[in-house]
Image 1 (tube, one colour):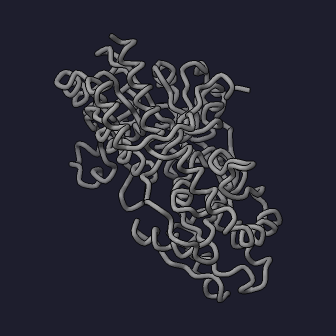
Image 2 (cartoon, helix red, strand yellow; image 1 turned 60 degrees about the horizontal axis):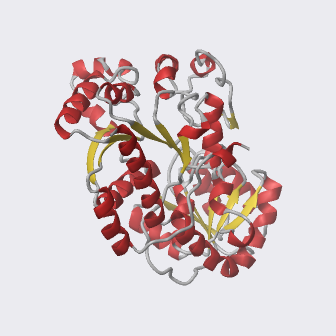
Length: 419
């Protein structure tokens, strides 16, 4: 199996005070540029949260971190001339390359850590960094090396039609990028042009074993891949469990709202306790209709971070039931950190997060109505017994102290090799 050849995150947990003091001595000279194209703030992005969290943790540990970020929110305010260049931005990112080159010349970083390059940065930032002999680490948050949408999901089903093709023409035919054939053609061309660019990345951070396998199938040598999941700040000692289930995600087909509601309807009204649904999206009408039809379903609408925290506290189990190969759902990390067990579907990175055996943080079901319907009463009955294990799994494997130490080890090794 590929994951046997990859570096896994250890289970050591360090106190932040001791952690910061130790690492300041060892790695204070390491300077990192963190490059990220931020997703629109109107659409909640776990990736944005992860990038911000990592920057805070690295700085707390004593590293010098220089953000190099662009935001998709800025597109609306661009001039006509700037907007005219947007179609080629994913491929070239001319302005971003000029700005990054100036930043590197001024800051002289040891490492560039890339997250999302689209649409304003472009994978060309990898070439720009290499031109200045700066090694590049990339955290892979999706399947965008191959898939124009990054999801491996299309028209309600998993899709791998572009795998192994020189040009992802199925993405163009099916308008996979932003529902546009023209924009899909640009993205598919970008992926084809930058195939050598992606293969030149010095170190890949795969969030799960599934992402590592995706990279290996793309042609990345296993020795250049490290498995290191995301972590979230510790919210502190969990509050006592509430009641019922919480679904908090984008209300779309791939996130499994329709699947959950079909499974929920297999049980009499009120027999499972309350189901609270938070979020927004194209399937909002399903949530609203379910809330109108049943007394045990409540639609909370889109919630901010404080609202989601309160909703988790009111629940006993968090539901994460994607039908696509979801990489690393942040909602599961948030649930475990809050001492809430998770009922999830056995797809993508969900099994990696929830775990199995004595360390399990919840339950897994096949992404099918009957399997999920059977798992719901099991989760309701076992929530109290599983809650402590959920919190312990977070502390052992996903706490920022553990993961930041691993990330700094990666940086330090690359900086040392460069020297």
